[in-house]
Length: 134
Ligand SMILES: [Zn+2]
Image 1 (cartoon, rainbow, N blue to C red):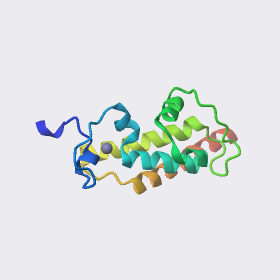
Image 2: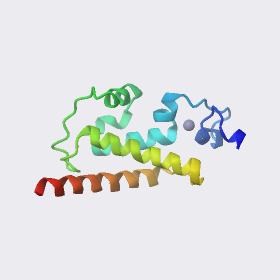
Image 3: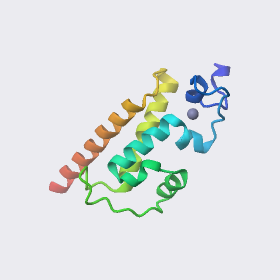
């Protein structure tokens, strides 16, 4: 149990492409780990704007601090959801996957996380639509 907690990223540590372990600082933990970054860039470019294909940590922080103003009301997917709602669903899905990895030892697979994000967005959109019709 004691050696389970290390300063190194468990994903990058077990990756065969990296020779030296990567220290898991705040940026790496929340954003820049390649598995998480793939999820961020894929989902933000899909659900917010293609400009986020190269989503950077500075933009992540801007959204996190509610500083990024971006209108997605004309988006074809879930137009009633705000940037912050989409962002929160993505963050929540990544956190859930991390929890499952740590406590249930299930691997973090970006495709699975991306699917769960779509389900979360669909559920939230349905709930908001239901609330607005009542
Ligand atoms: Zn990593």
